[in-house]
Image (cartoon, rainbow, N blue to C red; front, side):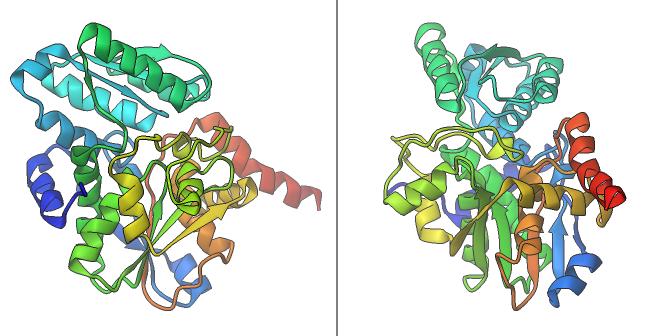
Amino acid sequence: MATVTPGDIQTARDRIAGKVERTPTVLSHSLSERLGVPVHLKLEHRQTTGSFKLRGASNAVALLTAEEKVRGVVAASTGNHGRALAHAAKLEGIRAVICMSRLVPENKLTEIRRLGADVRIVGNSQDDAQQEVERLVGEEGLIMMPPFDHPAIIAGQGTLGLEIIAQVPDAALVLVQLSGGGLASGVAAAIKGVSPRTKIIGVSMGRGAAMKASLDAGKPVLVEELPTLADSLGGGIGLDNRLTFAMCRDLLDDVILLSEDEIAAGIRHAYAQEREILEGAGAVGIAALLAGKVKPTGPVVVLLSGGNMDMNEHRRTVCVEAIAERAA
């Protein structure tokens, strides 16, 4: 069975060195006091394009042949992968086309266009956008860069796991975002390769969590894509999923789902207590701890995966609680 190994991830780390930031990990005093164990925050939302996606995109673009670079790249995205691929392609002088659904927030579209990519808005789901990708591959010969189910993408995202375990070698638990599985499977493979006893828990939203539904069903299944604060975690995993479904099934110790209110509480805590601006997906690890859905007994690392939230939406989310407190 095809998979991505710790060796693949180590090679990817060397390949993308200098193209991505080695983001810091810091101790959260507020969460550590609340949980009674050390809680470390991996600040990946400070990555160059505002999310972890630059790691996988940079690794995949670096592996293109000269002929493939001439043809250009195309991808479906909920926003962060598209921005990362547009950035990586721009550095190499490569044409990039990013296909997205109408659910993708405007701020993410603006950033992708700013990087010079051609943006196509198609349908109401990631699956609709993927159909346009496949058409462009067939008719224009572009090279498809999947957002998660691709060995180079997974290996690139897995470099985060190597950094985490190097920065917190005694980590007993790592909370990682779970969507299509590229991040979760890569991080899990990297960490389990060095520290097999470290538990890896995937965290997602309750509205349209495709990987969780697929794991429960024992095979990839279709799930309706719904509006959510954690919009970056939306989309299906593909019925023909080759890598991430099996890797998540074999490597993740558990999966946690969160309500919209719980995700909002994570965003508010990150802002008020940690002084960090996170998008909904970036805050789900904090949200899981606040909601009491995981009860760690040793050091925890919480991955803050992205900060590309529309600031008007962020202000509304943060202010809801403040308004309620003043009214009480």
